[in-house]
Image 1 (cartoon, one colour):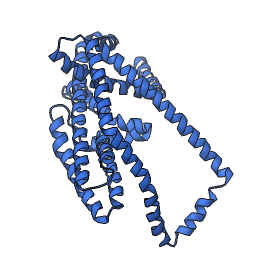
Image 2 (cartoon, helix red, strand yellow; image 1 turned 30 degrees about the vertical axis):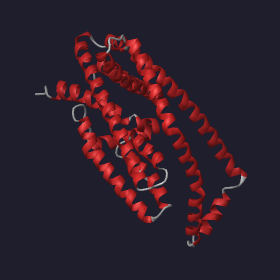
Image 3 (cartoon, helix red, strand yellow; image 1 turned 30 degrees about the horizontal axis):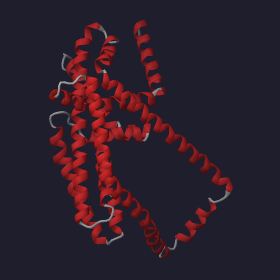
Length: 333
């Protein structure tokens, strides 16, 4: 191997190690880019209709989002708080039913003795340390979210300057291609965000209405969870179905079956009809690719990696299509 090639390999190894050490910084940065693209979609749509400069349009968009969030909070928050109160009241009922079920099992006393063995002080000390670590992790996550929101506003305020900065560190002969690639990544990511937002809102409204029609308790809370977990395809909808089914179990087994049928209908309609139609003009992710990305980033980075897996795959898919396939493979003779 020649000297320049060896130096290039060493440089790639050093960059890879540096990226791994700074993975949380890069994750916050990418999350800020995703939020900035979401803001940019709204800013662009607003500026097409009104003669506003970008800072004023950004202020209008952020103010509008705050007002809409506050209005929805006034409408839904009282009922949501009431349903959370009902949920806390249902917990003893669940415990009672589980206690009756446990009394019929012969292995429960042995399990109880094993659990009581963990109640010693020596075994509880590591648990306290873990709880303190969880509290520190929650505070760290809060700081990261605030920093992500601040960076996204700064990116959305002046995206062209950040784009020029990225182009400045690109070789001159590849700058036009890089500018085109950035535009395509932004378009794909913006389309994915818009499509998934509409899909999540639709799932939330339909789940809420369906559970309310079935007279299932905590319909609003369950519908909100199902809508939010739509942003985590493949895994999210299945996890979201656990809460309404668990609540329906307190009513009757027949109600659980009704909720299961409702969730299966909505999940299949969202996965095979609504989402493909909304994303058909922007990005088309294979379910296997989406699932492997979620599992990989979830194992490496935890919940933040799981949430940002699909936006990252959307960007990587555009880069692979334009660089790896079109510029390299298609020209390989």
